[in-house]
Image 1 (cartoon, rainbow, N blue to C red):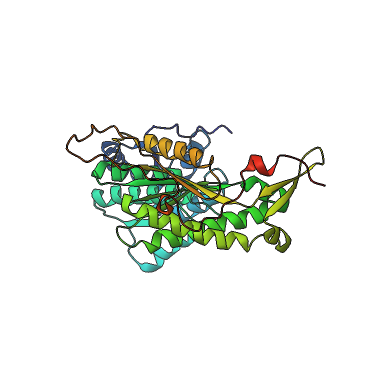
Image 2 (cartoon, one colour):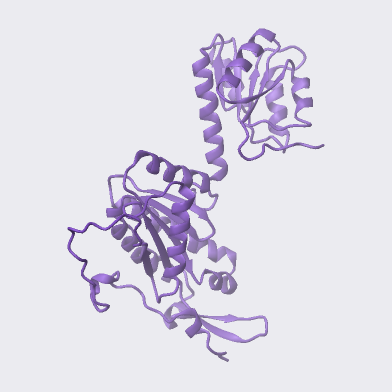
Length: 358
């Protein structure tokens, strides 16, 4: 069986299954007017045959059809591994609660009672597609939204014209945790960071900050520039306490892990810290969410060059300087306000791995 998935950038495909050709025609016309591609079938077997060659993004299924009714078709779709997660909206002329419950129990995600308003139909289709997209991208480990939702959040703020900041958060030396303790313990570190980041974003109050999980040990926060200091400080302190409790007592007490390389040589590797890169809209004009993420990622890599927990803020500007503004004062390196207080300061990875230890 050969199924062609939807290519990136193409219109979403809706499968309409109804034995009434007039209903099919009306639904198809309205869906196409709103930018959707449409597949049509007049029976359950015909719909299943279409799925042998093309996979839709959503199915609109009439419940009352001869030969194979909508309930049976829905059950068959849910049993097919290739389309088991397909959003299904049932169309029914029966308004009884028992009929609606039967459709939902068979595996449908939503239902619409005939006769229906086409604007409601389009709204329900879009809502079901959005829920399905977000559900597929939610991290099973942290429950946080993934890349598409993150980019949409940045795009919304960019479009609104409001000031915003994007913080890209990464765990330093995370690989050493997996190497020594295994992936199970590594997942505990990621979950701990997710909880710390959530508490940090909630603590700042309004305007609400957004938290997403890129994948692995990478997280993104979208917030107002004035909230960056509070969020990053809170997250660093909270994660430092949480991560210390996840190490074996002997490793936590001595302050490093012993990692054995492929040659059997043992190296001392420092405990994990956080590197955070920040891009802000107040100094640079971004035209696309990808540009913002790229700058935040670049700053995250810059943060990794420094010892301990470090926040690197992009201070480059593409705005012309105001000649009437006073010259900025250079902050001395020893000024405590220049760094986050009480950060764990450890040796760099290079320093920690300068030689083998028996």
